[in-house]
Amino acid sequence: MKVMKEKHALLMRWTHWINFPVLALMIWSGLLIYWANDVYTITLGGHTLIRFFPDWFYQLLHVPQRLAEGMAFHFLFMWFFMLNGLLYVLYTVFSGAWRQLLPNRQSFKEAWLVLLHDLHIRKTVPPQNKYNAAQRIAYTAIIIMGIGSVATGLAIYKPVQLYWLCWLCGGYHFARILHFALTIGYVLFFVIHVVQVMLAGWNNFRSVISGFEVEERSFDHLKTGDHATKK
Amino acid sequence: MQRRNKPGLTVQQKINRRNFISFTTFFVVGGALFGSWKWLYNAPEETPGITAGASKPLRRALNKTELFFRRIFSNNHPVKTYPKRMAAKQVRVNGDIGIDDTGFNPQSWQLAVIKSPKETLQISLDEIRSLPKSELVFDFKCVEGWDQIQHWAGVKFSDFIAHYGLQKQAGMQYVGMATPNEEYYIGLDMASALHPQTLLAYEMNEQPLLPEHGAPLRLIIPVKYGIKNLKRIGTISFSNERPPDYWAEQGYDYYSGL
Image 1 (cartoon, helix red, strand yellow):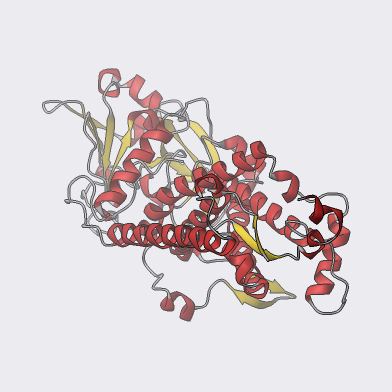
Image 2 (cartoon, each protein chain N blue to C red):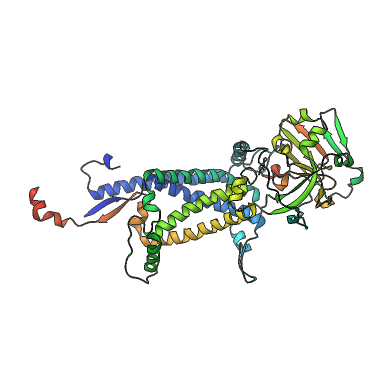
């Protein structure tokens, strides 16, 4: 028979789904800002492999000449991004949910097994629990990245008033690079995350909206033996 | 959730019930958020005044955010300084708004300081050069996102105020500065203007300013983006209202503080 198994707390679900559009808007408005000085590339041996970003990309998203607008949106939605993230972190800390989330001693070894399994190289299923080792690492990393984005963002937003933070982030120039790199990191995370969610299926996806998963459980063993007769 | 379920419900009914509640909430809230975004994105533009070019809600947000970050402003937060050898030899020129007219004569230039509607000081460059000189090597930051370590020298604005007995004027809320042709103009909150590293600069890399860098006298204010670092200052005025500001009329934040 079917059994409902509680998986994700209400607050985790709300902050997750609030974060999605807010982060999307932060990335979009950040792009409007970045365009005004779009100097970053990935260069190897004097050969430019990737230029951030090619013109067709800007044209597609209507990015050019919108610096002022981008800043205005960015400095509005930063509040929602920070407060929503703070709420999630506080919840995770005080509810004890961090125990299922933070990587532990086995996680880094196990994450390798998860990777091999996901790539269909290894048949054995690694321990899953609520989050498997790779998920623990990924979901903890994304929170650290979020904190990093807030820190580097504030460092380039108020580099004089928050000089200590700017120093901590490696100075103004480097902090802007970090801030950009973290954003690329989110996009990569997003792609993998969505693919994994699609592979995991409906039951898993639903649990991030409804909070529970449905399990098929057999209770046949209860119908025979002492247990059944006592009733 | 469980507690509110009627005892008679089967597991499947419970599942359906929770799904219905959760997904309805998800789509209703999602739709409302999307609607709010549409509203914000298409909100009408502010009435042009001291600020212009931004939508009404975004301008409101910029002004509110300014109030928050003004609380952490302090004269005890200096901009990081660098050794002179790190200063750029080729100093970036990013614009010539307000200094692109051909008729300007630096020899006859004088700085006009409007003390009151009735009294204006006319100050020559020689007089300004005779005041205590301060040097500053710092990372100049443009609103576009680039930065460059640059070496400037001039008189601290706070020293200038003290020397010309402008304490009463400095008690007001804002300073306004404009180029001689009044085509580029900026407004500064007084606290930022009086920051100990704010300079009326007449030298760059130990040489007199070049025309494209704002000769004969320009503002260097490290607690603001480059857009506030006015080149070729013609007039300085004081006010309790925000003075006109070129880029604040183009949708940028009035404060633009760092």
